[in-house]
Image 1 (spheres, rainbow, N blue to C red):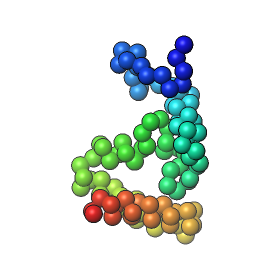
Image 2 (cartoon, rainbow, N blue to C red):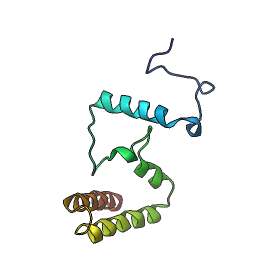
Image 3 (cartoon, rainbow, N blue to C red):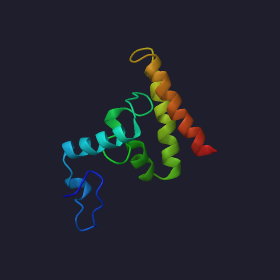
Image 4 (cartoon, rainbow, N blue to C red):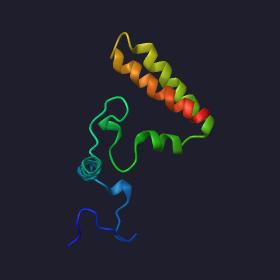
Length: 107
């Protein structure tokens, strides 16, 4: 019987689109427990970490580098624009995360 870290052949793997939400949650939970990762609503919010890839990585992979830089800049502006009216310091920290990613892209 396979254990939780069994390696499967390509034929045995289900497609990503076939995975159920509970399957995604199970994998995410295992990965978090293995790495002792806790919820960080700024750097790694739970709702962006369902499955084996983070949403930001999928977004980056789907865009031309120029588009991705614009996406990062836009998110910086969004969080700076709304921090006084919505989430305060948390939004400023989110803007800082996007700004750091933008700096990395330009370095």
